[in-house]
Length: 95
Picture 1 (tube, one colour):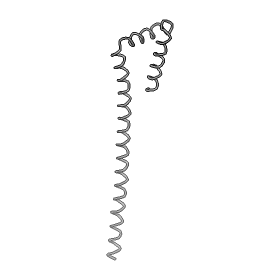
Picture 2 (cartoon, one colour):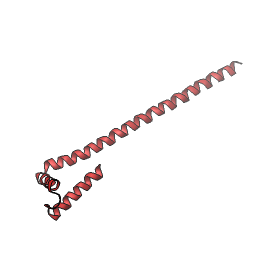
Picture 3 (cartoon, rainbow, N blue to C red):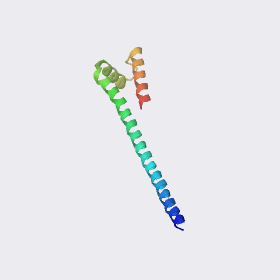
Picture 4 (spheres, rainbow, N blue to C red):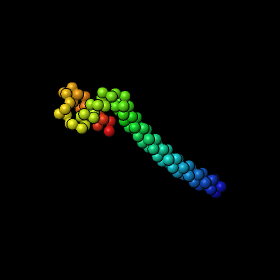
C-alpha cells in the first residue's frame, strides 16, 4: 500500500514537472518571437538610415531627387533617370 501511494505521488510530481516544462517552453517561444520582431524592426530602421545618410551626404543626388520629384522625369537626363529608378527600386525592395 505504501508503494502504491508513493507511486501516485511520484506520478503527480512528474505530471507537474511536465506541465511546468510546457509552460516554460511557451514562455521561451514568446520571448524568441519578440526578440525576432525587434531585430527585424532594427534591421529595417538601419536600412533606411543608410539611405537617408546617403541622401544627406551626397548633395548632387539630393538635387537630382528634388528635380525628379518636382518636375517629373522630363527635366532629367537619361542617365539620371536610371539612377533615380535604381534608387527608388532599392528603396521599395527595402520596404
